[in-house]
Image (tube, rainbow, N blue to C red):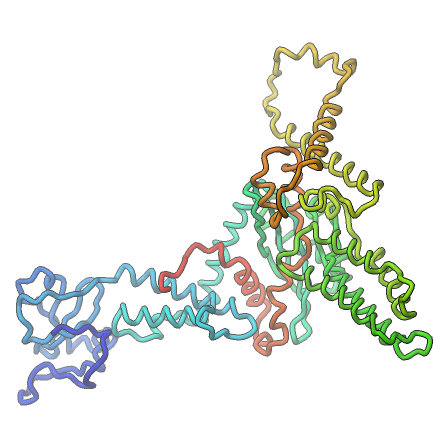
Length: 538
């Protein structure tokens, strides 16, 4: 029977003919394509003399002029056991995989790269992890390709880092550039530190396209410079790879409060990352509690201060979760401020903690216009019933102002760019517009006013679990819908880029990474889904 080189070997040494003859033979154990090429003077080939159509694409392997019990596919060079005594009409069941082999090698190389970048701190041996997928791919590749050394399949480190990684990164950057072109986006900047004390910052971009799906990308990573002014210059250099004439002063930036980064970013709208400041508040509250807990006049027999601090910790966990959205920031602040309300039975230490917390929430956990409008645009809270009338009116006015501005910008972009004069039936009326009872600006304001009232009075039949999905399906409030696309482009925190490298930041493996390798691996770890090659081994 015919037996492929990928099948289990029953013997370590199979001769070409009977052991009673002196016919030279090659053991199956050492017969590989590499062995044949290295001993080319000993090997020749001859056509198979069988009538079967399937045998025409094979040749018989000859060793020192004598026919052997092996044949080789002319196309893919696969070696197969095929004894000389086989019937002439026997069909050879072999699927030539030369063309597929190149593709599979590329896929394995990508899996190797994914294995490096998906496990920044340690190798995850779970079968669903990158390492497990690579192992399964190699096993399947071996069973399909037959006798082949694993070293001939895997890409060495030099090729992986100097050739494949730059190629993949270049391709992904082109994809990101095409997505961000002519698209409004916001930036997030996060700082982190390796176990060796080296400080880095990672820049990511977030955009909300017309499909109401959030798209976020890591754009680049750099070492924190000694001069804060160099931060802005480096960020502009990073942006130049993706957009034409980047101007960071025109972008909304969510940035951590580290002095080196914060002072180096000059932006039209710079938002301090709320999760960063919440951690500062929690540490300060713990310090206050520790310093005062042993004082006679600040005893807290019920230890209610512990529960109070735990509410802030839960808030921090929620802010650091990837599901956190812009509207959550304002809601968290309102909830924490309500928890700081004084009660008659509060202990002295709890009163002191609440007083300190209120001050820190006011000065450090700052919300801005985007956070407030995001809450209103969340249909679950559109009534703003937890706010006073003055605060509600303030948010409604913000929505009007931004809504009208977006409408004007939209109309400008639709105007013809030709210098040819445009005449129409209403041209004479426009000349007297200043004498009209209703101006264009009043008309636009009335429309947004009406839409806001309709939206507030709109009855929800159930709790909305996804704000963006609600607005994607909604067709009743077009002006507010356009505002949603603007507001929710802003990331809630700098979480997306910050957590890429955080989980294993103290791993010893990191000490051996060069700066360029770290930057490349963070980029690929977060953006790898933009690479089109999907492994076919699973």
